[in-house]
Structure formats: C-alpha cells, structure tokens
Amino acid sequence: MAEWKTLIVEDEAPTRELLVNYCLARPELKLVKVAKDGEEALEYLQNEEFHLAFLDINLPILSGLDILERLENPPYIIFITALRDKAIEAFEFGVIDYLLKPFSKERFFKAVDRALEILGNEADKPSKNVFNEHGLFILEKENHFLIPYGEIIYISSRDNFSVVHTEKRQYVTYKSLKSLEQKLPPSKFLRIYKQYIINLEKLSHLQSDNMGNYSVHLKDEDETQLPVGRKYISKIKELL
Image 1 (tube, rainbow, N blue to C red):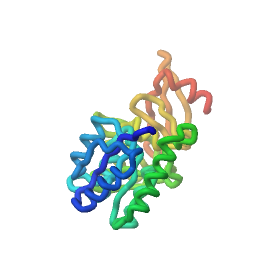
Image 2: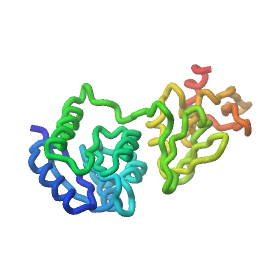
Image 3: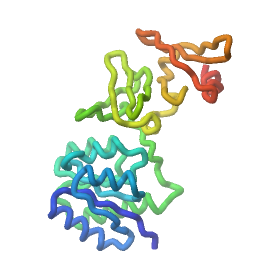
C-alpha cells in the first residue's frame, strides 16, 4: 500500500487534534508534519515535499491563500474553513476539496478518498496547471484580485516579484513568472523572454534589427515594445 506524505496546517487545537486522529485512522496517509500557523507551514512546504496538505484558510501570520500564492509547486490541497464563501474562493487555486467546520469523520474520509483517487491514478491525474475560465487570480499585499485575461497586456518579472500590466493599473505580486505562467492558458499567452509573458491578443507585430535582434510591439496605449529571446522567435513567427 502506498503511503502519501501528509501535512496538517491548523491553528485551532481542537480541530488540529481531530485532523491528526482522523489522519492516523487512514493507513494510506503518512502524517509527516503538523503546523500551527502560516509561517511555519510555508517553511515546511518550501523545504520538504508533501503529497497532500490539509490547510486551514484563516491562519495567523499568513493565510492559507497567502501560502499557496508563495509556492511554486504546492501539493494537493484540501482546505479547512469555517466560511463557505472562503471555500468557494479556494477553488480558484485548484484545490481538490474543502472541509467546512465542523466536519464529521465521514466527510473527512470522503475528502481523503477523493485525494487518494487522484494521487493513485497517475494516468488520470489532472494537471496542476488549473486555468480559471474567468481570469488570473493573484494576491497583491493583503488583497486578492481576479484579473480578466482580456485586460492583461503583459506580465514582467522584477527581482523576486512579478508585475501584471493592464491598461488601468499594474498589479505587483510575490510570485515568480514561471508560477504565473502555469496559471495562464497557453492559447492566450506566450512567454517571449525570460522576463516577459505577453497576451497574444495584444500582439501587433514582430520587428528585427540589423543585428538579428527581435522585439514585439503590443497593441496598448503605450505602444509597448519588448525584447524577444532567440528560443522564442520561431514560435512567434509561427503564430504570426
């Protein structure tokens, strides 16, 4: 029998103890760590590999949503929450289930069964690149935004954060360009350089100079011009 490395993140002692007991009742789950706040959970998730995490949304220091925003490759998530609207918001992150407090042992086992089905069936395992049909969901400071794809002109990376550029404003988020790229439908967006992703609907034309360097021109008010990496040129030419 396969054992799946599991993390519990819950700040309330009674619920945390309940989760531990329920996990220990399922031999398929190998409970590795238990975290009491968001900061501790983030440290575990950044330094160890887990298959599954039971993650409370409302946590001290960092919320469950904040934690997911900071992870490149999160494990499969089952959210824990006392608020139904927060549970619905959680599905923007592609979580596989949520447990609404107070939850029964039967409901817990149902969520586990669903997780085990996904973990144990690699052929049918859904991609973790879950594309929200409405737009890109990001965290900027303490605020969550759902940015419609059509409003995004391009996305750039700067140091340890990324900037989503729209006509109205710029959104700054502490997510890498790679992690944001995984949230974008490839039919709508294209990586053109190590620091840039463009919205293909905003692409005007491709230009080259006498030195063989290429740049794209975008259809926005600023008539933005961005460099193109050599390995991306053929793909853009194909699209044009």
